[in-house]
Image (cartoon, rainbow, N blue to C red; front, top):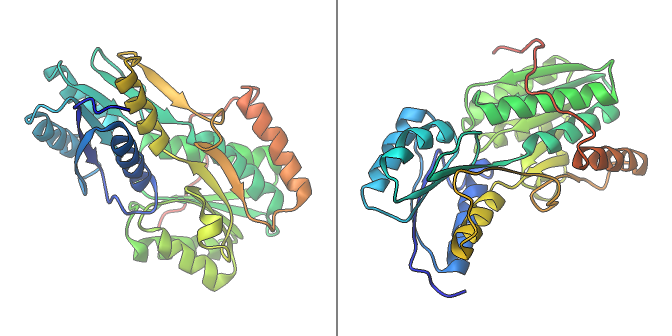
Length: 308
């Protein structure tokens, strides 16, 4: 496609090499910009809070790019605060439910793959105790935790769920301690929603013979001795979809869009070879029901939590 002369400024609430949510968005932006001839400038390691992100977005807007992407943390609140002051710039937040005349929110349906992860854990646990471990308490993580819990209940109502938000997506010492605490509580399958701090949980699971379910990317191929599955949620696909629409002139201003299992490259549950055929068949049926909206996913989880 011909160079449109567009300039994109991207703000990332974390490391662009975190092996998770932030890297997924960065790689999507990088690939799409290269393909579409869009000049990309970015800033990373920005804090997750709305004020920090808004300051970084405002600084980028001063250079008057055509497009601004905000990815991670409280990016939806930050974009909603800054975008109205710059009506000539088009903005995207990669989660949220707020949009305006010059800003959109595109969201990955991570709760769909999280629900399937919960069902898998419920069917495959031997101890009857399954775990969830995440870092910061932001809306996408909270909703995915709720969906995971619902998946566990749907598959195995007798299973007990141990869940923890340890306060960091990046600190491996903290995530190792949190994973060990969950394993001490009887967890034999642990679903992790982490970024750079996932290695701590991997080390804990490997040392103690506990299976892990990852998220965002396919961890079953990266660490096959630890991961029994991975709840794929490729946020980079959101950025690609937005930039494609911008360049093609079909962007609907003020759109809130969700990308889910209708695009299996974006959202699915990747399984390790060790998952039995019977369990795979059950998961396929659940996936069909999710794609057809025959399963309503909860927005909140109201059960107990583990505190460190």
